[in-house]
Amino acid sequence: MDSPSPSDARGLAAQLAALDDAELEDLLRRRGVSPAAPWRDFFDAAEGLLEQVSLDRALVRLPRTALVALAAGSVAEPQRAALTALGLVRPDGTPYRAVASRVRELAAARPDAFRPAPAPSEPAAASDVEEAAAAERAALSAAALADVLLAMLTAPLTRTGVGAVSAADRRRIVELGAVSASDELDELLAAADMAGLALPAEREWLVTAAGERWLGSSTPARWAVVAQAFADGLPDALRGPGGILPPSAWENTHPLDPDWPARGALLEAVAARWGLVCPSGAEPGWARRLRTEGRADADAVAALLPPEIDRVYLQADLSAIAPGPLAPALDLRLRTMATRESRAQASTYRFTAESLAAAVGSGETAETLRAFLSEISLTGIPQPLAYLIDSTASRHGLIRVSAGDGHTRVDSDDAQALATLEVDQSVRAIGLVRDGDGLVSRVTRDAVYWTLVDARYPAVAVDAAGDPEPLRRRRLAPDAPASTHPHDRLLATLRRARETDTDAAWLGRELDAAVRARSTIIVVAALPDGTTREFTLEATGLGGGRLRGRDRGSDTERTLPVSSIVSARPA
Image (cartoon, rainbow, N blue to C red):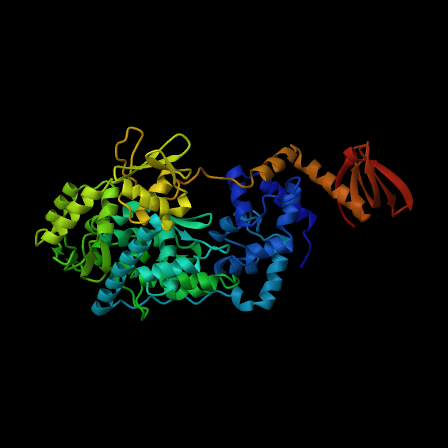
């Protein structure tokens, strides 16, 4: 590969200097430039961006259409604007010399990557049976993602150093029944991420506020949010004049990118999971409309799904049976007071003392529980369930947890309950010690409360006035921070070094480089009479506003004022 030529580096430096900060930040980010790059000015930046390592980072991520355009030697719109924004071509669409050289080398090694892909064929229309199956897959995916998000609200998924969900949390989600295999979790999280329902924050996956709102939506509305976000978030390379390319064409869009096969396969799996493509490759009608018109048609999916119900059967064995898909909002409320045992078209829930205690601890009362269950029950409230509600509510608050001055205090009217807590090894971690009529801990109030709840004690958190304060064990992702610019320091350095006379600045760089390399250059100097003259010099020194060198023509030492030098180029 050719090294960056002075003229190319000079032109790119001027191009970079003309960008505003947002455009320059975007270029640096997309080119993978480290914020700690030791660049002193735009000329350093230009040379760095035209080095082979930097070019390879950019070229391997380009779509096939851009590679074909670069190989042709002249880039037309719309590729021109995109490649100019990456610093790979001049504003007139011609690739920089170093870019063209590297493209030739890559094309020689991978000629298939620089040939246009055949026009994709339109997928066949799905049959009625295939559409019904696709709608069912979409509904099951919405329910599975809801289960994953609910689990994440109380226990966020841990990420490993490489970003994958930890093996322990994968097992946990499988055991919950949200997915049947751990790799399905990746597909659900990819969809949630694209839809803004969950996001990776440092070492965890957290549910967003939008994700919490999504949980209360109907199944068709849930599907529409995910499907629309999926279509909107697909890479530009997967789009053509008629909209999104058919999934069968996605595999060939990034031929040089070693990461694309895995990413493309994940996108295809997500599309299939959410009913946007059938296993046969056929396309449901709603998927075609989304692909060509950009509109998620929730009504078309809803027409093929069984209607959601708003009633359940409450049984004397403390179970509740939903004879069909329960409306998500009711399902969420019911699951705050009962444990779901099975999920299908008909779901089963189980009431226990622990599940009801958790509901009361979150703010429910015996009255609100009975009112809700009476409203949704087709069979009234069986006597065993009514008794369990009353007994659980009456025991609630037996142990009170409050924040003191630098400590947490645990009180109870039942001395035996406190005595039990003192010796209970399951709550040893919070370090409860006797203090008068109660117990104290150095752990925060909320941590003490949840430890006692997990140990199945009838605890209640109280505020400074002694009134019950319902706590919810839910962690949401923080609001999106203001747009960050990791290259701020680098941008400031480049801006400070920018000179009003770009030509003079670049000339100084050329002369300095020639002196350091002891190279021979051709210098054009302006003479006092207004004419110019060329000198072929072996540059030996630069200082005090003068260039020194051996004149190859006369074999003598010559000194030229830098102010009189018009241009310099390699000999």
